Length: 213
Image (tube, rainbow, N blue to C red):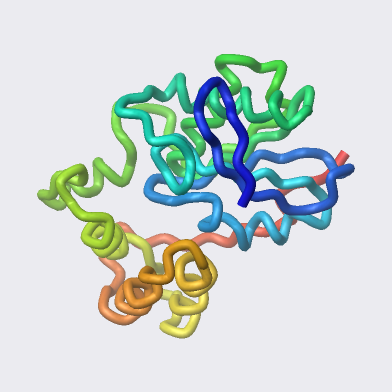
């Protein structure tokens, strides 16, 4: 997994697709990293050069003692420039949608297209933190495994079979070579937790939502 210096921060990223294809920056959600969007990146790679970075404070990227949403946005626009592109499409998943939106606010010339997935238009905290608060938990006080277990209660659609749950988690978690300890956690999440009425949802993401120019 390569890394590059962006505005004084070390940024780890993964690349998918041929270098001559139109660039897309694909940004993961809270507590994720590049590997958590790798399966989507691979699907998009037939039409795009996909760059999937670890956000600041995530994965192998720099972990400053403090940083802001503006810092995250500046990191993304700086990454586009550092990789030699005039501009790139940006796709953000959940928390990543806030980051790419901030990038567009800071430097719209670096963002050719903007795609926000599972985003929200208002609020002062992440949807994950808000859900944890409604359930009576302080997300910042939970270990990563505890936080994932809590959030999993709102993850699954009642129509998602056990086999499909395990398949999704294998793609997102078990196959991650950087953190093999997640394999047992992934199996536990697929097996132990049931969908919470009123919070369950499902979606499908594939290359059909984007078109190369």
